[in-house]
Image (cartoon, rainbow, N blue to C red; front, side):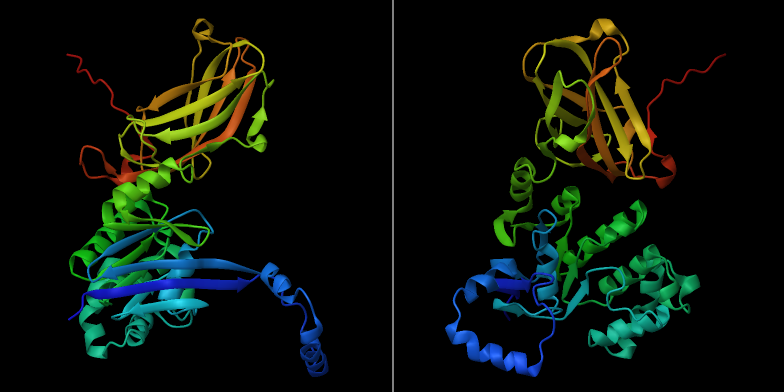
Length: 411
């Protein structure tokens, strides 16, 4: 028996740009237009301008048991690829061969009927996958226990929160044993504890010999779960290979954790010195945007000097909810540095330790009077994963940051 699970060959998907269709035509107008076609010029060029290729010349092959990660910036074609593989949309060109039953989890609520209860939707999804009622029933308790939705089983899912929807949808997709499991970046709606639970289940599915396709912006999860990674850029395969080499190239390309500072990010300052570029990496200077708890985070800022100044650097770390969790700057004016020519500065963030979540880094330079030379907002974004660097288990009750303190018993 062949080990082939998925074969994608010269795959392309073309869409018509929004608004390009125009108004509906009458039968008379359609007939007149068809008669006029031989006499028109430039029609193909006009059609090309009104369409774009979400995918173009995509090729790869997966065997049973492979776990493939798919990475790329927003709009790279990742979700479109999964929709084609899930048979939700047809390709414009190329071939897709799929061997086995496919279970997809592309967005919250996919495959659920809002008027049906959680219980009814479990059986509905199983039936869609071609399973017998007895097969679904044998997995029912396991699905409910994983989703932690026992109290709401007989409530229509239209009343579920997005988190409840997600928990049940993932539990159904992972436990009804499709040969191929396709997962888009939907786990982000769950809390950190449930995300970790889901990632563990994905790994378990892969080890059981089933094939998994996993789209995520969480590079740490991609590296931890996937043996092979496809990097998509503007609908084409930029690189395909082992997880470590592909993600390293992706991170160092400027597509993820580093970038130039846009004019709109400079919120205030005299402009004498400006921050021009920011890059995030680990302590060894390897580009990175996902970190374990307690792992050092290195931020490097390149600055341009327009007028020689003495200044000091400032760092602000903000949570995804907009809460400032860390503010770090030098209070002693004797520590101000002479900034006479363009250069760069690095800071390693190690304490206090950030706990799991997404964070935004902002940076500034101020002079001896406390006035800003520059303040650059959102120069970089990082994610802290729900796992300690030293292997300790994570407890969600710990808060936003944790700090090691010196304790002394007074006798």
